[in-house]
Length: 131
Image (cartoon, rainbow, N blue to C red; front, side):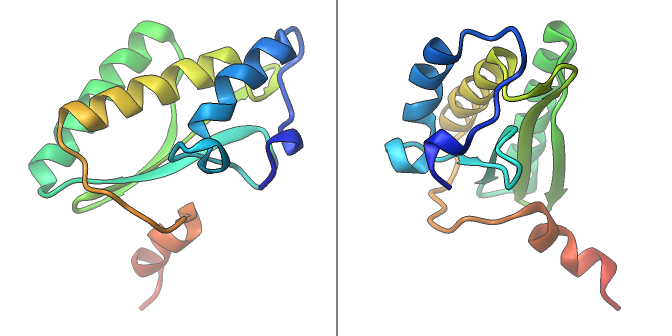
């Protein structure tokens, strides 16, 4: 999805946020995609083991509590799908960008594996809901 399709939260410095978002996006060399609505950043992160995956999720959960900003996410074994979006005011915010950057740092620290294809939340949880 194109960078200019983002919908930013009311009250944000849009020009500054665009500068911060751009390098995070796949189009800018990063590993994040805009959500379908343009109101969030999403990414799949994969680790070698479930234990590493859980360490990542624990670190993100702790930081989320401190920042009072929590992700939409799901986990299957060694994969985490994570989406950062702001619900009030609705849209992409500086909180989402900070938390995406934190996730990148933690993923690098914990040795995430390279993932080359875009995965959506529905695709990740599909095996859980099908018989």
